[in-house]
Length: 310
Image (cartoon, rainbow, N blue to C red):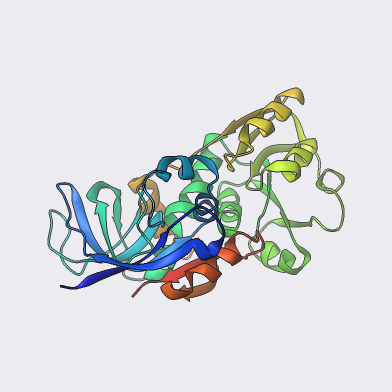
């Protein structure tokens, strides 16, 4: 019987707790589609979950070994409803499983991938793209807003820059010196965080998109004007950032990215019409997923890291 090769979290801890495992190819239940995965995005939430941190780890602590991968792109295996065998699809998979050759995905979580969008490009969008889009919408980012995006060169950040620019915002983004040119090429004013504290480089920010959390984010609140809006994405430090923002007269809220096929379709169309550019820094084979996790948890990656599954 054909087998399904997966990279699973076998215990909470360092990246080497990820192990290759063979399982049976899953059988889709009602409302699910069997997908042969081609590429899966590697996201910071994957590394945090593997380390035993945050809501993701709490959810799966009694289900180890567990296969991560919240976004995946691939090919439909069997005809089912509106989907036909061979259709190229991508989705935000709430239950994980993208780090495997086969995945049973909810049919209502899948989008068709346009012909002129690669599966590599598509697989970057369900987590990073939707996080960027939903964060900007949550704080009602609008034309002429002065927007500061922390970690502007990262997977979410480089997409958020472009989406904010498309709304007519004036965008600033923190980054390392080596990524300043890249961030500038996306249309943002690059702020080298190694040069000086952000509050010395920019003031009177209307909207802060916090993709960092912790000390960096709390310090960045000094750049936000009274009455400004903040969305903080890292869940672990969200309560701290929200409290610190309120003390400054700033409205802050946390978020968890939600599956949204209409929004994912819009992002895919933006890639198709070249109004959204995706940066993919590295593509690792599934067997090298441990190194992918070493990279993503460094917090120093540019754009997206992917696993090539098949």
